[in-house]
Length: 101
Image (cartoon, rainbow, N blue to C red; front, side):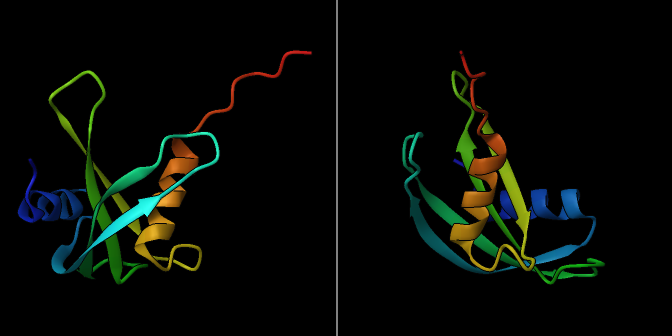
């Protein structure tokens, strides 16, 4: 199980700046056509990032593997909460199958 320190390392490596954990919150989000997502989202203050002052990060299990995937999302005008960050990544990961006529 990853620790907040593991996530902090991922945030700093991905965003090329210092990060400091300031909060952790449980998020549960349901989607129309996907299973619900439930997990802990960590809030990191960013020091030295050119366009954001906060990032959200969490880990999920890679299906069929014992590995964990770390997800990092910057706070911006469209992402103002941990729930928004989860929604943004769920929409990015979701692919509709081709329509059959």
